[in-house]
Image (cartoon, rainbow, N blue to C red; front, side):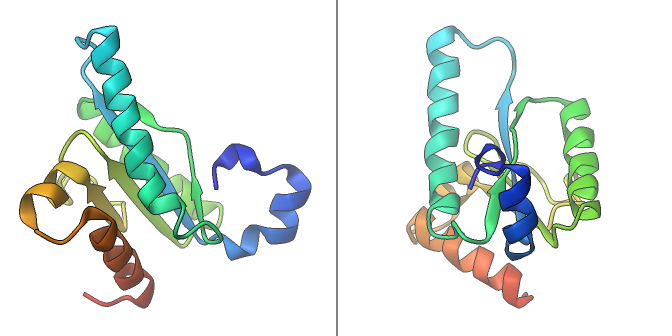
Length: 141
């Protein structure tokens, strides 16, 4: 579910069931034309669907960090810390457009990067996402 799908009452009643926060990272450079920007946002939306739909009762998607840069990576780490401080047990950072490195986004519990997933396996991306999230929740390395 998206953060905006909750009001105070539904969060207070059901928030304990949502232990995983997803923070999308779009990775825009600011040099994209409007059509290129739309394409990047659509890729991000479609990639997020692969996380949100199968795990609808357990994950909450927060607003995206839209632009790339060292400041954005630092912001991702701070956001991961902060959402954990309000009760999320796991934080997943997802990127449909750019590969992120675990060494850089070290506060995330899982990085899901579509370009890397497409390049590194013949397994469908949706299957890899499902397997990696389930492994995270089972604490299996």
